[in-house]
Length: 536
Image (cartoon, rainbow, N blue to C red):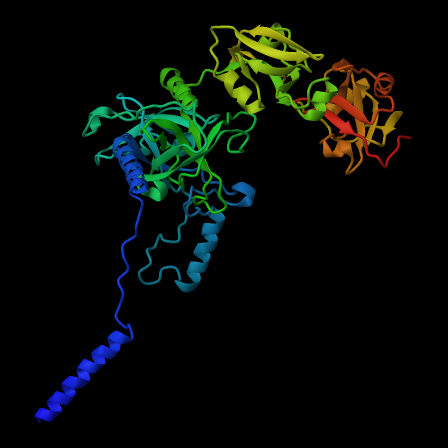
């Protein structure tokens, strides 16, 4: 027995030794050797984010809105309207179809079915959604997006605060042109005095700068995300109406999702630099491209809404378009020069009184360069009405300046575009064909002017036909459009008939003209001849 015990002990010892010799024991990796200097910097950044979140969160609110949309028999493209991220509501026809299918399985009056269950009557179905906002002042004003609260009725807006208190809010003012809105709660209904967010500046932002977005994505309150500023002065993004809207967004990769709308975008010191407004995505979720309204613009709008209930905007009284390199060359201007082209002047407007003319190129306003149409529109609209502003422009290759006294937008009327023209081709009369541009032209008679909705006495050369896939077609010219000016000798010259037009154009392979549609604002364009075609 003793001999067996010794044998077993030897076997165990040898087995353990074998396992050790084969290196079968588990190795525990050493901890990561992180540079202490880098680790300290990372901790500092983390602490900064924590401090910003603690500082800003009490000023951020969640906004719940219950809308009652109009029940329509047909919505967009025959479909019923949709709520923001909510299931669509049924039209009366769809509801009736649903009830008919239901009857097949549960005959009317069946067990457990109320007698009036099948008495369907169309009714408005509330849609509930959430957004974000932030406290603007101690009076209870809250800034958010217009699209968050637009359409909400009395008692439809509930605001939730970080301390757990809630209060009904009323709309103070809406501005769809910038997507800014102001709502108000009664501070007496809150547990604590409202703590306004600290307003920063959006005029000296830099690409790569750290920012944080705070709000209620997907209804999750007090959510903080971090990122950088990806770009500034994003204009013509297509979020707002290009004719009435004012776009000048901050772009960020800080995660913004449905429900973040109206919440603040803050810098690393916790100061609000923008209002989160929109995202570019194919899935309604964050794709790293978010847009925020600069706080300078948002504050201007908010102050106007609080004081007047509407936004006071200034207007110059011009119809403008970008200056393309081709148009710049036609006017004798450096094609690399930034500027915008004046197409029309409203009679009696500040631009008219200052002596501006169609064909002038605006290159400066208030001592700053003019680089884009949206940027210039925004700068003019928010400029004071009580003082003159310096405007620099180029005419016939020479730089000039004027002092502009802007007027309230409601007092400056751009030419009404309410004509209802016929788009039927003009009656066949003698004309001229410019095959290299894809144009057929004829004189504008009084009868044709009436047919297309032009005012009596209007002069120009009428477009009779446009060849498909031609230079004129590519520029959007249509039959019924009127050519009223040709750019020659670096300036626009009026054209009253075909003879004048042909004399100005000659056999040139480039044609710069002013085209006036019967139902829209006119514009200058440049046509380049097709090399393979020759005029008849």
